[in-house]
Image (cartoon, rainbow, N blue to C red; front, side, top):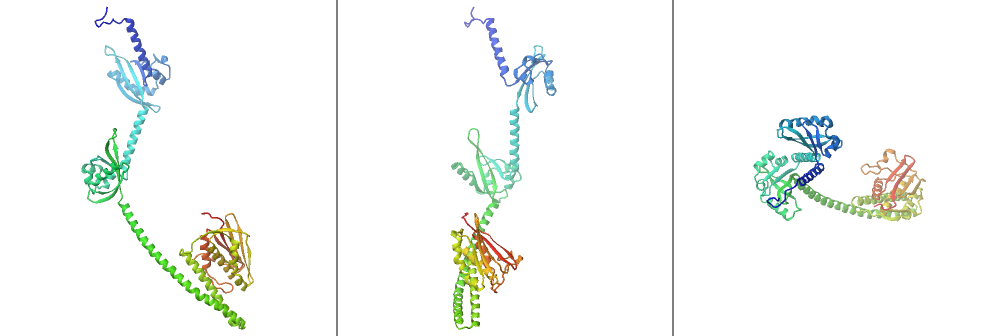
Length: 515
């Protein structure tokens, strides 16, 4: 017989199949869930459990059914959960709690099943691992706490404000920077940042418009106004903060007081201008000094050349007329003039070096050929004291240096060697080639130098002069000039000497362009 709706009533077989299918589906869900599910009687005997719960206990499902929970779980777990079990048994209401073990966190729910007589016949425990959630919560709390500490202790004035200029929050530094007692004092008293914090009320709107026109722009210099009406210059860094829809929600940023920096910049600018004027004045003084030295040296050269020329002529005339006394005087005049001319040349070279008019112009050249005409200048002077000049130079010695400076170094060192060598003595010039340098030695067997005086030889601030073996005068300027020119040529100069046995002067010349 059909039902009123035209369908046939379900048979018991059909109903049984439906129930079977539902149970099968529930069984799948029972084992597929991420939660641990445990069903036990009110005397704690396990009635059933899913595979995840069995796995956590460490036995198969079949081995656990009929066992008591207290015999399977660790004592500390039972002691922790016991109060919650008792609470459910007492109240008949579900219970929710968290616990942890082995550095894992779990969320537990206990649901009682009550029969028609109001008696609890079994309880179901659902346990979910919430370790990842808890760690994320802890990390979030720590992050928020870190941000709060940074916000509270930052040395910059941090703020949040609405688009229309109302204060949302500020940190203590912001409050003190603007002369307020606390962040709360700012929130209570500042109703509009444009009129109360900006010296120019229109400035804030101008900045917002600039940010709209150029989204990459977020830094501005602003003149701010404190609570007491005074002003300070600040550097503002500000950004739009958008909501989840991408709409602009509010503004965040920070302010840095740059009053001192601006003052320092102004003082620096003034100092630079003052320095520029001083440099111009110094340049003018140096130019006038250079001109003075040029005039002096130029004007002295003429008279000295005349004296030397006429003295030479006088000596020749006197020798022809055999007047030895006048001839001796003429020689003295000539020798004095020559020494004065040497001093003048050294003074002129040193002055040009100090004032920057003698430019360092290195080039590659062959030293041995270069030295021959330089050393020939001393043949007559050495001959007058019967001093022999020996040369032990390599056939070829290519160096990279400034030719005029190297010539001046040789002239001064050889001139000194002759000056301080006794009649009949010997001056030896040698050169030793290495990979990077050529080391030159000018050696004499003359009077030598006291040990305590050696360290003063190359210093202009500690004058050291002495007479030669022929009573030749000295100024000490020649060795100072040698040190100056050796340094410019990236070399090194030094001396070894023993009083009464002579002196060895050494200096190095680069063989390659190391620049």
